Image (cartoon, rainbow, N blue to C red; front, side, top):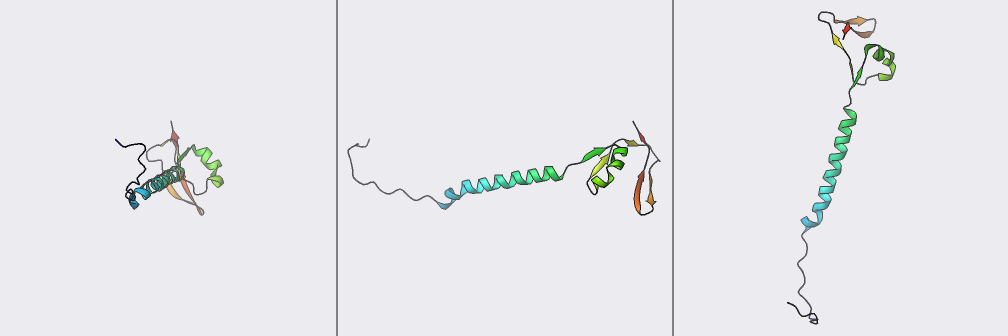
Length: 95
């Protein structure tokens, strides 16, 4: 036990290593990068489901956005081809 009235100088503490000082900063940067990547991936990976009539009505608004037509095609009813210059997907939807 030390004497509280002892005023002799103590030996200096060893300096902190550089790794200990930078480790919390590196962990914080890694967490920020992970959160940003996760949010970006979730926002850019959205896939919307539209009925065929709604997709046709929103054609100009949708542009090149990804979406899926709701419903299930009936076998042998899918027709692939072109009508003028616009590609066409034609099929019968049943529920």
